[in-house]
Length: 187
Image (cartoon, rainbow, N blue to C red; front, side):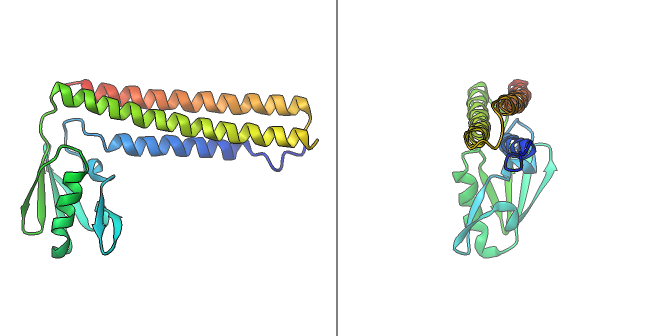
């Protein structure tokens, strides 16, 4: 069976890419405890381009509810402050020289619900990405069958494999969302 131009493992890798991106985005959502990963999505306007915050500063967690951002270049402090404020994480920078301190406030009920909505939005984006990969895979299979490179039976069997991979990945996305939602809502 010549399925050289169809690789189910490649589709699975691409689907896993969507879940990895989701894990990264969910890691940036605040749960009431300080975590350096909260600041990972922040991009700083630096040297004429956008750079991740961790490429212009060292992020540490000296206390459970405090983040410390040690900016390496004194001229970048204002840009780092602006990026943090613009990030919509609800953190207020307090700057002393090249150190930006971020006190992580307790989450109120309203903010928790907002964060859950954001988590749902991230999860839906991941589901959509997985469905796009599925569609690409099914389109490839249809072309292969149309060009008589694979039989109709092979096409149907491989399409079922694609659907199984899709279902498993979407289930994983739903599990990641459920864990994060519980984490956000638990006081």
